[in-house]
Amino acid sequence: MNANLSSLFWEGFTIDSFTHPAPDALLITLQPDSDFAPSCRRLRCSRCGIATEHISWLPERQRYTSSLATWVETLTRLLPIKHVAQLTGLHWHTIKNIDCRRLRRELREPERHTLRRLIMDEFALLPRLWWMQIRNRCCGLAKFGREVIDRVRVDQANQLRDDKKARKVIKRSRWLLLRNAENLPDGHEVKLAELLAANQPLNTVYVMKTALKELWYAPDEEVAQRRWNEWHRQSQESGIKALQQFADKLKCYVSGIIASATHRLNTSVLEGMNNRIKVIKVIKVIKVIKVIKVIKVIKVIKVIKVIKRMAYGYRDNDYFFMKIKAAFPGKAR
Image (cartoon, rainbow, N blue to C red; front, top):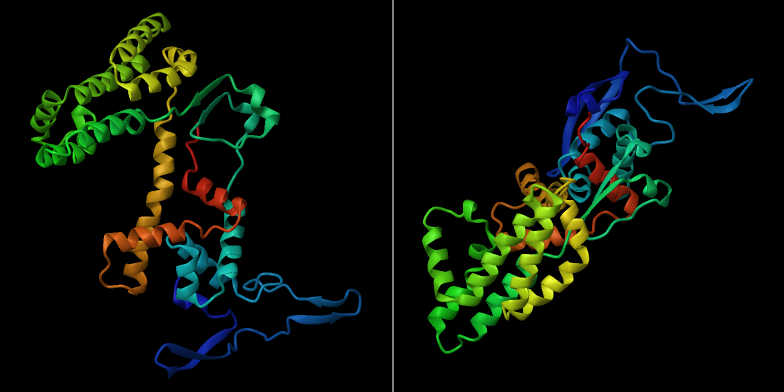
């Protein structure tokens, strides 16, 4: 069924005329199609009593047609519910109910008894029934960049209150320090080298960040254990409090880190999914602007504020998780 305006007209009728009763309204007059025999939807049957006739283009117990539902389903794949409601004139809950039926119809539950590996990030809501079947688990750890590099960068900037120029350079170096060396834009390698040469604590935590990554690329668990021992020793001898605290916190997870040499699992894909769940709001806002043309010019800060408000648009967990599953259907093997 095509999701376009022409498919919204009822089966058994043709367009007679249309008028514009108001600048923002369109009134379409329909007349019965002579090729279709008219019928009443509510019937009184001698055997069944009062019953509702099944009509192909009208879902049971609904006040909208199947064609309208198909059009709304197409829109909800691209736009937030709020804007689909504004575009169609339907209530927010009507749009949500249509989208829920689509998701329940299209989504398929995974065969959980076949799952053997589990990756978690931050937190997880897990049914206990199949937890013991999992052979390998992977959990996201605290961020080195946020807890160490950012902390040291701020502390170093605060020590340079009297040197505004040097303080400004350090305050603006966050992404320069967090990015991997191979991902730096052209010309930024020199800036990074100059920054690290001028500030020993920042140089230390940057080197330790690179060394920490080598743990996950160890060829076997023996090498991983050796690398961890060396990394932890160096962190404690660094004299940098944020680095020492992070190393002690990471020590609780050392067995899992070492096991990564055997089981090549990581949370990179999962973290990408989490980011997409957030970023998709930006895409939807931009599409709304293009489709409805409500706003011609919008500043980035205003977009961010709208995104934060829209994030609370999913008013129940079941619907929220169905939207996530629909966005990440997985790969069949």
